[in-house]
Length: 288
Image (cartoon, rainbow, N blue to C red; front, side, top):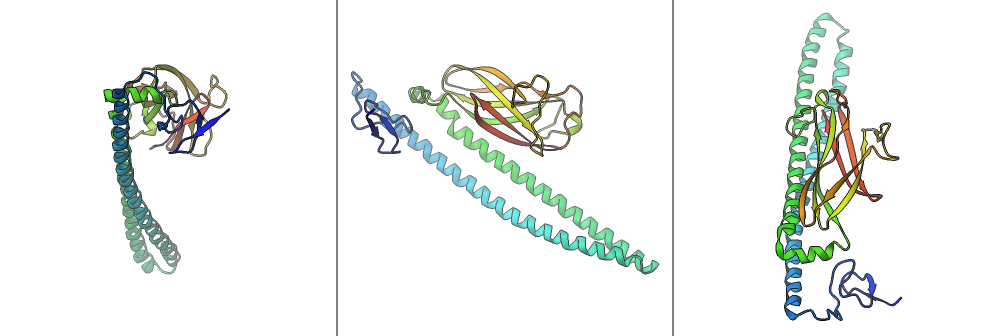
């Protein structure tokens, strides 16, 4: 079969194609039949708008890169704190050995030991607070990226014709996933003693009306898959949802766990969302 190459992405396309099936670029020999000049102008206007959104996306990527640099600097500071803590732990061991020498020295060394342990606990708490602040900043940056790049595109009427063309290649995008506890967690934290069923709240940009079966995997900190008696092969559970064209939808998947409080132990977890045999989103979360 004869093919022609896209000048933008070099992808092969059928000779009679008007647009590249990979990047959407219009070919110079495009033949639209009875399409008017006005519609062609509309296409170029939409393409210009795409370029504007891409510039905004690049700006957000720069901001995210800046956050990553800040994260790297913080990690360097954390490593330094760990080295300091290791030195102080070594000193504690030495002090404990000296406690056995005399009762008088034992009292003095015990006081110094308590002081060092207090300082260490303070530094550990400071380290945790810095990590928490950085995590929140990254979440805000990710949310801003989603809100700026995707939500305006779905709501803009002038973009609907472009999204219809996009739906031929991509049916939907998962913009964000939140893990919710049915047992009564407060804020963004999930507390072990309150946990029952954990559900996934999906924010999805939909390009075409469809019914999607989502397969979900829950993993513990050791990478072990959580399954039950009725779990489909290779997954924790699956859930079918109807998605509506040209909308940004909030979709809640069924909960996974137990109605008994405290079902989930504290630790680091991750979840994967699959559809049609393809991994489409991963999410890590912590239960305290």
